Length: 220
Ligand SMILES: *Cc1c(COP(=O)(O)O)cnc(C)c1O
Image 1 (cartoon, rainbow, N blue to C red):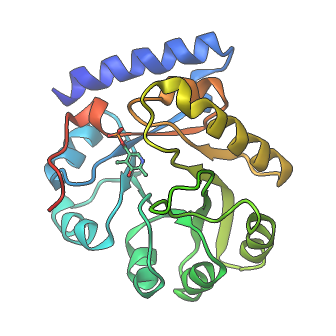
Image 2 (image 1 turned 30 degrees about the vertical axis):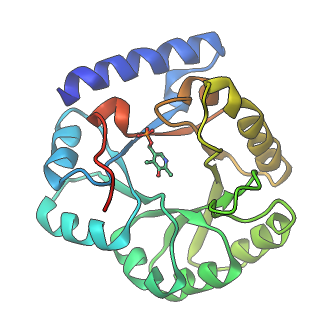
């Protein structure tokens, strides 16, 4: 089933890239595996995927111990990270996409392992959304660039849940403008419901769960 779903997602990516006049290779598909078991990660790996996104440190700690060796797999933390879990996160993940404060960035740097990081930006006023505000972004970019073990690659955004994929477009466009202003190449944006729009707006990393693995059961 994963292989079939993946073929459909691949077709959607290729069509969106073509519409946008972009090359398929500019876009990395990140499989979001939260709540799904380690076996789902293994299946997606066997289907050819190499980038995986997880939301919860503890959940992934258990799964990773069950995974065995998957050469070339790259694990991204895409969920909010509390500073007190930064050391564990630095051990488990190669990429942290949810850096949103200097304090967290310093803690990740102190964990001692070289890490690729993205800054999560909050572009909507919803109180539940995490991420650095636009006002705080310039100082945070400077701070992260000053930390020796962190390699700042780009920005991540999670817009409000879209009723229509077009609802996300202004957020994606805004994120791209911010990344350009700071000379950052990686744009992590777009999920199952809106990744075509994200590709049109320049996404380099799309984070897709449902379209690959099917619907998730709500986390208790
Ligand atoms: C769950 C999640 C996704 C994937 O969402 P789908 O709609 O299942 O594709 C992407 N990004 C983040 C940050 C998520 O938490």
